[in-house]
Image 1 (spheres, rainbow, N blue to C red):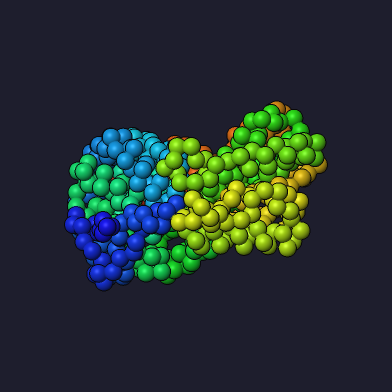
Image 2 (tube, rainbow, N blue to C red; image 1 turned 30 degrees about the vertical axis):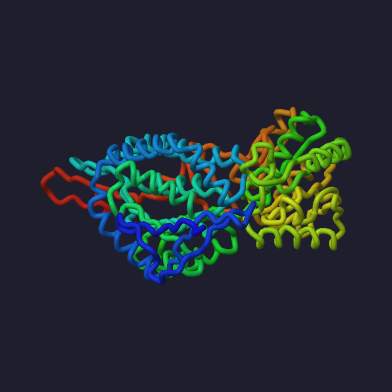
Length: 496
């Protein structure tokens, strides 16, 4: 059967790539299931999209922000009405189980309604002037055309984190979704179109990062870039954008630690670790990839955690009984396998898992066993580098201070978790753990749209999604009104 064909959205029209070429979107649980054929776009397509966004910006920036916000409310309602269908589409194209893809769509719904409120909260500042009969204030202004590059693991939630605040602030957008998951971003953009978004305000260009993504980053008329992906690619994005003086928001990798103290609620810590390590098949920047165990509970925790990991059901995410879906593609399987081999070569032990699943019901997909590594030392590569798969490392420590030191010893700083009943220790962790997010008695995964999301060190460059998104997608303008009817000079010594 011929798969459905999808197009780019440019200036309000659905157009094929100028090359006429497409990229097939395959179900990672069953490669015989072709989700669709999407454009293999290049610089020419990006040029058209940016030109359309520039034309639309002239009018869109003048639409009152509360009116822009009303479109987001309508889009949010459309997402509510289509939540189950969009979740099914997402599971087919990236694999995670339906409970998670429903949550992904719900995140976009929450973001739509939250950001719509910002249409009446794009606050500036009024302040006294140092001169007589002079009024001083500051206002937020849109940037212009912004480029958005989004990943495959949250293919509707993360695009909504970028699109919605950019739009309510008065910008126009060109978004390039991940090649593995374009349909979910297509569904999000279609919801905006159906909600009444004017042509050209959002433009969707599908294609690879090296072709469409690089052209978007380097385009002279794109005024800012918001990128979510690996630290390696993010570094290249920042360097290329610097040539045209673009501000760049980077949300990148993580190597997140869950610390379990001797006094922790053991069952709660086990539940959190299992969900943090194997939710989304470990394919989250916030995934729990290191579990730090105080020596008094390490043996008991390890035995129970391994038993629970072994019991997880792996399979097609459309099956309601499945707990862990496939990895998104063969490259991710190869990465997981390689890191297990490296860990073993450095002295770690495979306590469960460690292999790709390739027989029987797994033969047509890309599946990897939930994997637990024991005897891991902080210096090992598997304890320091992002795997982005269902592979978790267990490490022991004696004192709380040692645990904090181990948690902070890596190049990333996104999410951390501490399980303890000691309130003093909890507040110390909130202060001392080097991360953009710290959870107390909860796993490292799970963000809420109205809080800042992002990290430190190699995880990000200081910007935030969520609460901080409006800051990135607006620029400040200082405004002075002198009603003295005479020349008054600031920054001059006016002392009598």
